[in-house]
Length: 114
Length: 112
Image (tube, rainbow over all chains, first blue to last red; front, side, top):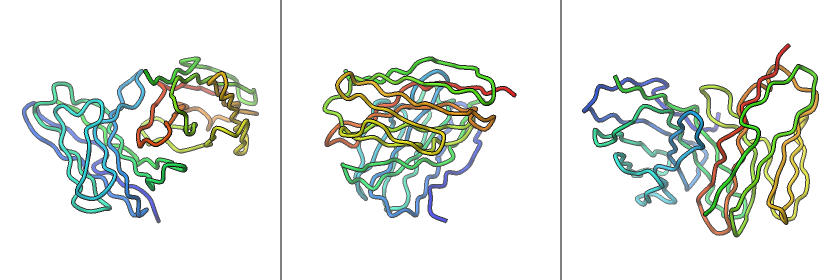
């Protein structure tokens, strides 16, 4: 099956710890994205990558880091510098073609800081 | 500032009834507008996509309309089913950009 996978589905972190969320896609998409979703708010962009070995900060990048070493993988690290990391995290990908840039989303990872 | 506003925030209807969700945007220049359905605890799934030249598009019981002049879109759900209970998110993308502007969504609850 083609699609986007995220793991784990649920993640618990102690304060002061870094954690890494996995995102993998087999859609051969160039562009990948990380979003954060909080209750009552629209999805907010954390980081995005248009091509391998390149990524840009989104609107709320502070306290997060990413890498894009492979086309199919875009892991997100939530560092201890992120003051309020408890949220639902969504990864997405798109073909990158401007005129038809539909995003496909993964199932999400719910991160809870204990 | 590029914004997408949705109304109502939440809606409760009886099974079998119709409903209409609204989306207003200020994104410019406009490329396309999508409606997504998001079940609780899951990722959003695309329902429809509309470009500047399209006025209406259907996907089964879902019909989206777009008025590019007034920058408004609506999603009409016909003969609602219990499985339609979800959040519906309007997403607008601008011309020549990889960024997407998300609305806060409308939470729909369909009761038996």
